[in-house]
Length: 556
Image 1 (cartoon, rainbow, N blue to C red):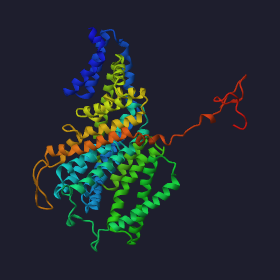
Image 2 (cartoon, rainbow, N blue to C red):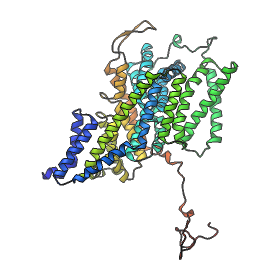
Image 3 (cartoon, rainbow, N blue to C red):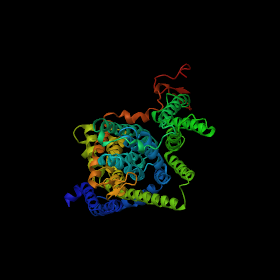
Image 4 (tube, one colour):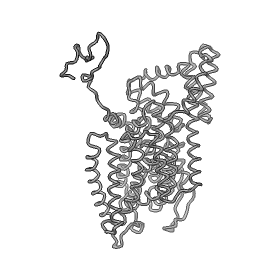
């Protein structure tokens, strides 16, 4: 009994791990574990029965959390866009655009994955869409199977780090920080990860060109009547639009604006300028632009507009993340309606899926609340704090341990479970060590991204496996028999991209400024300029609290 009394917190945590490994549902394992050890603690006189009187109030606090409203909004937006045909149009257009260069299809998958991440925020939607559309084309024209599956799965997981990410919303809630700041901090690391994927594909195109062949001429459908591809017209259009966007950006936003605001607003201005030029050319039949230039413009601008509607309004302070999610959901409905891709059946499916995912998250959060109530009651938070603060290496040792721990835990737990179980234990320790929690949250988010890519339980690999061909089939274009994609090929294809994601963890850890730019727009106040007016007898009418004498008229 003495051993049980002295070690109730580690035994409670160990029992939770055992229950999870046995396959019990996470929400019920958390709640049952909390109640069981609560009863044990009461019987040992470590806890009082009054502790559980706080439980209903905590559960109501979870349900009434306004921040979590963003979850159903962004989920619904992603599911509607998945069925609106936007992913198909983007992949077809961008794939044809880059098809003439080696690795062009892989570049297109990464670019479209980035755009889908910035509009849907849902991994399943991105992976399934790109797996259905891009994988058959890549297999048809001889792409290495491991690269093809790896780049699709990895590009789909960009939804975890590029706003509006569901993971970032949950992390912000668990760390007690602003979702808007979390979005600002994640923007540059997400773009860096996209660049690293592109760099890896470029390396393969240079040193292993047989793995990433270019599309043959007969597969490039975008050609003008005179036989030209029309890319020169597209380059001119994009260059002119970029120049106008940069000039307008300087006038509207200004060089002092935060980096995230400049990026999102610049994307909108760039797309809007190109759209107006293409629209004028099409309406007046001027013949300035080629068909490919107009198609690329009309396909790319709607998602760019949606990105600004969701992220731009958040970054410039017009809307909260919850309001931005609501506007994004409305924008997705309008986009699907404009494409005539929405009906009552589709709407019902999207609403059912959104309800299931939201209930899944809320039940896990309620379960973690029950667990945390008992865990803190038995001083489990102090046990974790002492365990982690005594690690060798100080802050760096703590960050390395946390990174390794989250990476290993991601083999068995998905991002929801990691966020609700691990973050409440690690966040307070990081805060007491003086670590910026936004930076800490982004570091964890990048690491948690690998949970989607881990063989054998990575969800992105499961999504891709569900749409990849299970049997050999005859391609309807070439007439050749194409071999099936094996599970082993999918698993091996994920390894290089897991290593790239881990490299980004190291970069974020070594370069905090990559995330900390979100603080750049905070107003800095010089304490020497602060004056306090105090009304009352016996005190000067105005004095400077930072000096020894009342403020003079000149200082005012």
